[in-house]
Amino acid sequence: MYPKRTLLFIPLLCLATALAGCNIPHTLYAIFIAPLIPPPTVEAEHSMADKTLLIWIDDTAVGPKHHSLRRELTMQVRKHLEERQAIGGAVAYAKIAQFRMAHPECIDMSIQELGKHLQAEQVLYLFINQFQFHHEAGEEYYQPSLSGSAKIVDVSLGERVWPNDQSYQSFVVNQPLIEGKGTEFEDGLIQKLGTAVAQELGPYFYKHKKTP
Image 1 (cartoon, rainbow, N blue to C red):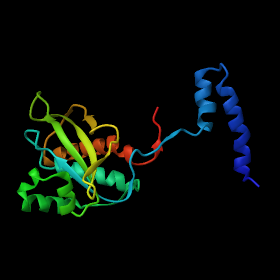
Image 2 (cartoon, rainbow, N blue to C red):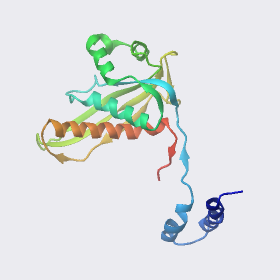
Image 3 (cartoon, rainbow, N blue to C red):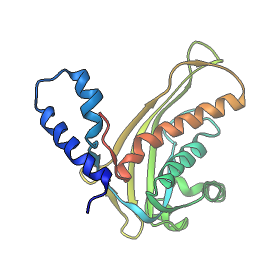
Image 4 (cartoon, rainbow, N blue to C red):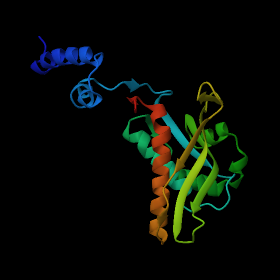
């Protein structure tokens, strides 16, 4: 036997399906019909739910950097993926920072070598090719933006496993012009920038609702 809610939903869904093909006003459809139809979902392009992930930020190509850029990119991407159970675990940022300090030669290491040193199974490698923080209007004006490329390398194989059909996945995030000052204010802007990167890249790695 079907639950009462399911029995009620079935005729409503049939009605919605029938009316969807009719020439009815868009507003009526959006208000009464569309909510009855479950939104389509998009499957993950790459699964890391059982993998330990290293998130490595390569910002060697950009000029002046904000002191919290690497930290916030790493932590916000990790947080986003953990909340959606998209990874099995992640290398802590503190461990990554300590490794960088102890091994300045790491800038010349391969992605596979980095993963082995930090005991990860896969590496999400984010190469930053553009970073802007201050706006030309003055010191207290900010318009953070960042662009780069991302790929995942399997440490045991030493090969790229995502994306499948190209060398890397480009990403671009831009924040609005804002006025402010102080270290705390600046750190907040960098955190928002990291969150924006996480929201752009994260859906590639878990099932999610398709956006309009």
